[in-house]
Length: 118
Image (tube, rainbow, N blue to C red):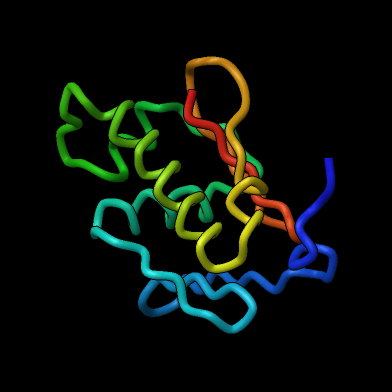
């Protein structure tokens, strides 16, 4: 399996959380979508390197989580990966899912972001 030539050089990814939430990949602003998706991402960034229960993550996005909360959170993660991939082909694959079924964890560092909706 060969890597994308675009990813052979270090990737600059910035998550700006003071003021309006922004994601910038190699100088390109990424459209983040709905307020709930931005809240989802902000929660992952604030709790980076921690496993966050699905309940806690849901409470950060909704005052009263809908029955579809888990599916919605998975959709937000998928959409963010696709938007990162559009900014730089192959980058979305670096924001990958892993693990069981109880929470979420993100790691933002270097050129890798990892998130899991469990």
